[in-house]
Length: 259
Image 1: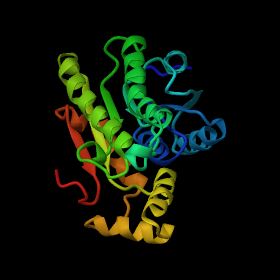
Image 2: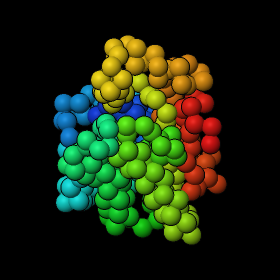
Image 3: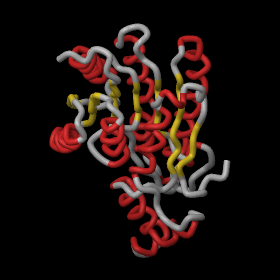
């Protein structure tokens, strides 16, 4: 497949939610898109939407907590598309509860999925895409990466880690002309949000609908953010208009995070 001169984005967690919305949005901006996730069926659905937007999509089945699988998927994407110009580290998971009751395995799974994977994928891209072709590295963090989130210590710690990694790497790669930024959503209406509401409902002893209302009351605009709204920020930071922005953690949260 020839892709000379075309912008190429690689997106982890591309099968649903923010990753899927970003893939389709970048496709509309002329990006070819390498889609990585664990579910082939869901990736096929994302791929179909990318093609419907007039662009090219490739699929890589990959567990981002495995450095070996990450390297294999990245190298395959580079072989198929020629290079990677934009990386979006989006794969992640929720989970939490009362810290004293949390088992070690869950803690490790959250940190490995949300934080260690960002290192694995970023390192692989830096090592395997042709010199001078990578322009932008973006990672989905959270407003929970800037302040503590009750009953979500592991999640909040992992997202704080992403922001720290972003700021450090931005300084390292600035001389090479590579921008590095984090995107920090608040409450976004995704499958992850549904699971979080169920978890909070159990902790608070209320219905899921009541949990949703409580959460929305915390947001100044009074609602969850749509994945497409996060995708718009991704598209901007991936564009030539944002070449002067690096080392930043940009909120898309309806006023939830005033920092």
